[in-house]
Length: 304
Image (cartoon, one colour):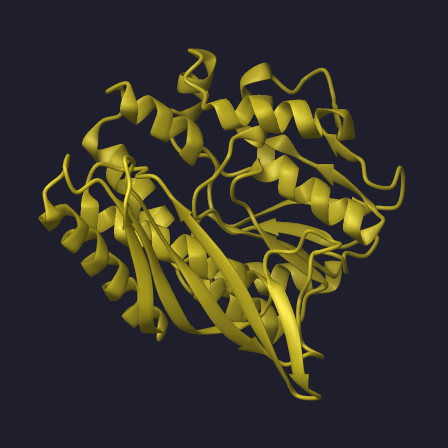
């Protein structure tokens, strides 16, 4: 908890530790089945970010029984079950309540070797930073609620959010990396800031290298930004130094809260191209090297 890592880890023996995490939220897309898939992928991501293997899960469901047909909940749970099966995770139970607002997610238990656990506190000077998914889901979701996003872009966004970070996690473990976190509610810069602070290093980020969904810049310029973006900017803004050429809309995108975002990986420079190549060959096409670790000023992120 001290380093704000993605999940809690409890050591059972010299070669076994359990990873525990929980995450649930309100719908981010209109399709119930897709929402179930995204919610599960998002919850499992915390285990993958720490180099672990998720094993079991408990459903967490809040459903307004008087407002919505029960078939909607059935579709959500079906999407969740299918995604768990894809991940090799066994559903062992759960809990549901009648609530005014629909919410769904998971409590997850995974395992990791205590000596092979990956945290957000191990980044080293001269490491390269790799991001495995595009940014902009928070802004796109806000635009979707306003009826501004076409079905093709919704499909692209949904596919990304429903994609497990399983393969990316397995490949980073094969190559060997120094630190990792997944990019979710605190946005790219929030999670990057946590990594920098926990590792006692600084970061230099190249904004031109950041992968972003289509039309996100346009929506950001129109002010279609979620409230969480402004909260992230207010909380983490003092730790970020932007160069003058970084446009305002790009600053918004970097603070945009993500749902089921990619992994932000800190890897030794001599391994970075190897990992990048493996990720692309595995079908993670939007992956990119987005920056590097520097020594000073510790805890600061410089965005150019």
